[in-house]
Length: 462
Ligand code: URP
Ligand code: ZN
Ligand code: ZN
Image (cartoon, rainbow, N blue to C red; front, side):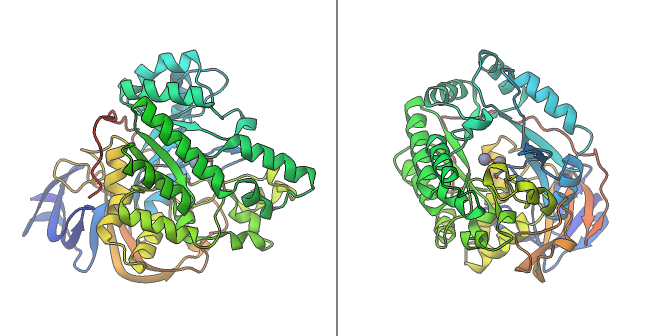
């Protein structure tokens, strides 16, 4: 007799789809089969059962332009759980010349004891200091096996030059850490910002003019070239354009182990939203792109060249966005999304005829593989953590901010019709959301140290 058996669901692990019962004992998936008996049995016929989503890109309590992103680890993880997300990965924040250990310890102290779901951190730097280089070996051993860098944001002290990027890639390669990049050409962007500001053009419609698509494609191409030279794999976060995704695909075809992430906002929105009086509520970097770019990105999800969909969840309230005073230079950038990601991505993908196995893969199996969570997360195999999302594929609903749990008062998808809804979220065997009812407890989520990244091994996409 198992603790919990979910019966008759369509099991989907991102590769295969089959009808079976799934049994949980304690925190783990114990068996998959037929006729499994449970102390508690859930009849899930007509439902889909998949690994809980892994959001590999969130920013809880991130200071930005005088504000702080509105969700902390407690509220953000609760919202994530409502949406079927069972693991999230946030970032450390380097102060001054400090190394990875000091920035990790500060971020860990701020986050620990709050999250409802399991969580991890990417090491994140703005300067490749001697202390950072020293700490990389510790990071690899400790399970901080991805290093986030920026090729933009010089004015915030975050932009690395190409020499530092190349050096970081070589060190990451030798230690089993995956270098990841916010890929925009910061020097061009800063020049364009200065030019438009001098002309008095600071409104929200200037945002895409200061960060045109070529600033992304150029940076992706440069990172691909440096990765090839360093014989390292690399990962591009929040790919915002079809052209950027095409560069990732081109690099992959030429043998570079380049991996790509995109976000629901880049798959579903376009820059006409920036035209209204509420345009600044849609502000993020890179910006949402002209009509047509989203559909191009979908093509690269279908081809497997974009492997991961994550959110870049960085919500601000309308009041916080309204502090911008009409200037993008003082506008907190970032969008809410952790709670709506699984449902919205699955719905929009299904609408476009993307095979469901690719959709499930992009939000669970592949982020697990790429970020060293495989074996415990992103899988339905016995022995894995029982992190599960039960999903009603027939539910029809429309996004309304009032029904969501993120610490903001608007949704960028307000009114959008959605097909399919997560109806139960299970984290390490514990039902934390059931039919919209909250059952979790803050602080139950654990910090997860992650496995090393194997730079010599190409990841399968099919
Ligand atoms: O606008 C965004 N994306 N804010 C969060 C920080 C980042 O660059 O990912
Ligand atoms: Zn970024
Ligand atoms: Zn981000």
